[in-house]
Image (cartoon, rainbow, N blue to C red; front, side, top):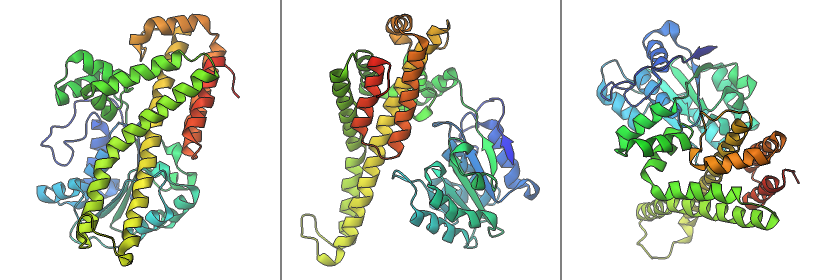
Amino acid sequence: MDATAAAPVEPATLDDLPWGAVWGQQAAVEALRAAASDPDLMTHAWLITGPPGSGRSILAHAFAAALIAQPGDEQAMRQVLAGTHPDLTALRTEGVIISIKDARALVERSYFSPSIGRYRVIVMEDADRMTERTSNVLLKALEEPPERTVWVLCAPSDADLLPTIRSRVRTLRLREPEVDEVAKLIALRTGVDEAVAEQSARHAQRHIGMAQRLATDAAARARRDSTLRSALAVRGVGDAVEVAGHIVQAATEDAKALTAERDQAERASLLRTLGIAEGAPVPPAVRSQLTALEEEQKRRATRSLRDGIDRVLTDLQSMFRDVVVLQFGRDADLVNRELDPELRALADAWPRVRTLTVLERIAETRRNLEQNVAPTLALESMLVTVASGRTL
């Protein structure tokens, strides 16, 4: 079953609980608002799809708040939006995949009756990160859920889930905002000038979160520009090895910066909970808890690193996509306008088939990284294709 979002309208106001944080998806808001208030329009399982940055998880939690809280109960709505309501169970994996253990825990929670709300809502923000075995864990729960339990899955596309999952959910497809819409939002949120906001929205390919980071972080903008120019300068295997190393190093440093402070805070909090003073030896009886935390942090660091490299590959895709656009005589919607002279030179020098080969190789590299291929080797191989126009 499909409920497909339609044309853009103005975003909800910030005081419109629980929908105020949802931006640019008014058709989807109206569909879910109607379902939350009319049992005839409700179903027990939903799938919200849309490109990264389109607001899937924000919309899922707003829907959960509308389902759980009584109409007009702002306190309960705020609890759900803050993730502290007892009738909300939410999973956003920080690992590479969603584990079977985590999926089973969600299924177990789904059979509990609501404690104080109208419904119990289970939100899985990264449903596309389930393996086939993990997906199968959910099937029975989606087939025969308790009367007052609602599942809300989020993924970039319904194609990211097994057909057996897709057949048991109602799909709500979010629209992708235009560059100028994202730019206006970023300028409003951050106060940056319109030129920086427009460039950031364009370079982020309308991903709101990434656009906001680029707009507010000059170093991130500089790293992106440097990476693209380095890829354009690759001429052989030696260059490919050097640039691949720089990309992985930069992504590793970014991942450490994003996770180090949180890792330290989590370790300190656990030690306090266990009654262990800072710097004191850890008793053998509780070492397993510390080890479990460290393993979780390693998985999170791996996910952060791979996400960082994937963002670089997404930027490279946008650049070579621009080359293809130029090769077909179009230049009105280039993502990387700042590289216009270099891209035009490449478009003139390369046959179209070579550019398409590079794009296919980048897409293949992204898929390989999802399968735990060594990042440096994968990038080196991809950049050799950029240099030669041939796959290894």
